[in-house]
Length: 152
Image 1 (cartoon, rainbow, N blue to C red):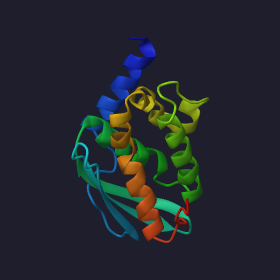
Image 2 (image 1 turned 90 degrees about the horizontal axis):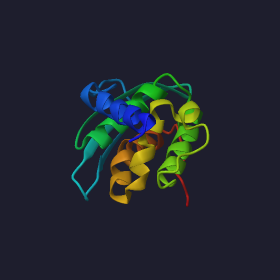
Image 3 (image 1 turned 90 degrees about the vertical axis):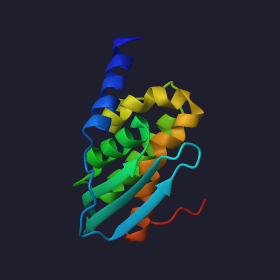
């Protein structure tokens, strides 16, 4: 295992052990509950949005370290950021998950700790775990009226 793979594994483990944003908080404008029926991972995520900025992301969930770490990374990366930055980050994370372990250019710059999920993209069954919190955030932002619903 390369040093980079070991570092990435450590990032995922650290976020799973000490998650960012855990604990549902108020106020919030959008909330989403998502379940991965394949493995039973679940997350309830809330967003508080003011003037197009995600002021708070709070969540609670249960499941594997990948799903829990992924929503933690999302919370850390996008709390205090414009919704438009989340939309770009979501597209980048989806691209990473579609990379089949090859990664994406400038992954660390584009995704911060989210780049640690490069190895997860090698395993199709685990991709759903990594995407769970991101899809919950997208849905919560749509519920809040801060993001347009995808038509495709």
